[in-house]
Amino acid sequence: MYRSIASEIPRSPGFYLLPSASIWITLQHQRCVIRHISSAARKRRALPNAFPVLDLPLQAIHQHVYEANHRNSKTCHNRYVQLNKKVTKGGGDNAIARHTQRNRKLLVKDRLRLLLDDEDFLELSRFAGLGLPYGDIPSAGCLTGVGKINGLWCVFIANDATVKGGTAYPITVKKQLRAQEVAIQNRLPCVYLVDSGGAFLPLQSEIFPDKNQGGRTFYNEAIMSAMKIPQVSVVCGSCTAGGAYIPTMAEETVMVHRIGTMFLGGPPLVKAATGEEVTPEELGGARLHAEVSGCVDHFAWEEKEAFEYTRNIISTLNFTLPEDDDKEEERPLYSSDELLGLAPRSYNYSLDAKMVISRLTDGSRFQEFKARFGTTLITGFAKIHGHLIAIVANNGELSYQAALKGSHFVQLCDRRDIPLIFLQNTPPSAAVTLSVSQAEINSNRIKAQASMMSAVACASVPKITVVIGGCHGADSYVMCGRSFDPNFLFLWPNARVSMTAAGYAGSLLHPNSEHQQDEEDIAKKMQSKINLTLEEESSAFFSSGRLWDDGVILPQDTRRVLRDCLEIIKQKQYQLSKEKLQSGILRI
Ligand code: COA
Image (cartoon, rainbow, N blue to C red):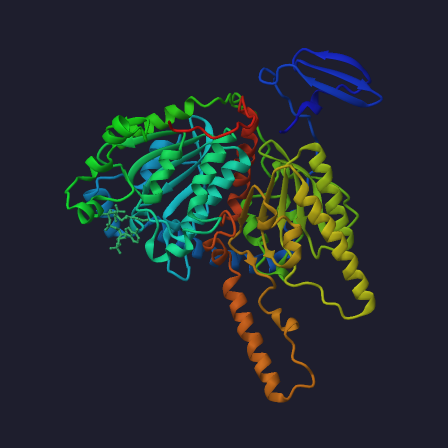
């Protein structure tokens, strides 16, 4: 939990009662013991700061690189818009007509409009499901994100039944599990809008049996409930087979009359087995489940009413949110549009990372830490929309000194409870060892990087990673890549994600000098093939399609996305009761 109590610590030693903060503070030889008397009633005040301004306007010397980056950013932006259009269409015009006209259901975007306070929500992994070996699955068949319901940030997981009846592909399961993980890591209530034909049967072997597959969703619901992370669901469509367990395992469920159905096998199965003709309503409609089975708790005549119920359920959760703080925030000195020219088209087009920082932080202010040591890593403190944060940004190869500095800084922030923001732009490939002295440098670097990996992995503060350029090799782990469990990880559209960058595979596969000419030719062909593969597979959209991240964000939106993430992360301190229970709530 964050503590801004440092702001109330008086400077001279002594024994004080601070009436505004209701905190007794004992200071002995500069060491203080702090006891909270009433944290809910306490008003908090951040320490004033006058961090230095990073006065870094674009210079004529940057022009050439800036323009090349800008052109590349425009190309990436066009691709972003194109994919966005594709995803917006969901399963296509016919499926939309079937969904809205024949089945009389609301589209998922209209459902979210009724559920959430406004459209200002943080959508996660919008491009997940595009470009997969089994085809394009728009939004992976379900929309996930974090939005506000009655002022409270909640994770939502909403099936899009226009995409193959909302059935679960392997990527759908992965997306749902990631959304649950976001809810767990940030202690956010979770709302499920269920409208799904269950498993996509042709790919059942990739959905059903393994640990992080279908069943994990239900397991998570139970353990989340036990962790006091509320689980609410709305049955607003088909809920067949495994799908039936999502609402049944939720703590509280709403079901819509004549829209929602829930059964293990549908009417065709009953007919085939017994010859009996039953309607979906008789077999598993809202009336049956609200009045007879007890699988749901609220009966809604229509979808609009169901979302009103859901918003009211959220109001019963035990949170007290702080009053809105309408104090003025400092904007960066420079336009965020300039980030388009700073987003490197390749590693060689990277400009000073402080130029990026100065276009993200309040007032372009930055209190740098160890400015003269290990300068290929920039570390320091800043504010984003008033939230105190710590920035770790690549500014070249992560040298021995840079990694030592990184370890020190990460531990410092962990001790002070300050969220870490990693701006990742790693070199295209690992340094090659060509001499004994180089071997020594590289070995020392490995040791320092291993220490920093450990510091990052063990830091208990929230972490957010934004890949602003390259994400290659071990440097990407050190900079809190996906496997290091950041609370959120986003990519800029220009980002490149691969073990080594395209064009650099040559050094790893060079032919043996004793080889005959034809063998060298074969090796060269292999190199060019691998480089082509690396080029194709390293794009930000390829990565996001496979859910290796939480989505592609535009550089100019980064400040807003970081603000949302920081608010979301902070919310857990407003939940009144958090201790873990023995079991999830049972529907009995
Ligand atoms: N696996 C694979 N494809 C499925 C599917 C499943 N479980 N359920 C539906 N589909 C496909 C349909 O074949 C159809 O594909 P098409 O658009 O290429 O023709 C598409 O999804 C939409 O299904 P459709 O039945 O036309 O739409 P609908 O809105 O009338 O009904 C369902 C949707 C989900 C209610 C209905 O398809 C259904 O009951 N499916 C079977 C569910 C089931 O038994 N699941 C068990 C899984 S363990």
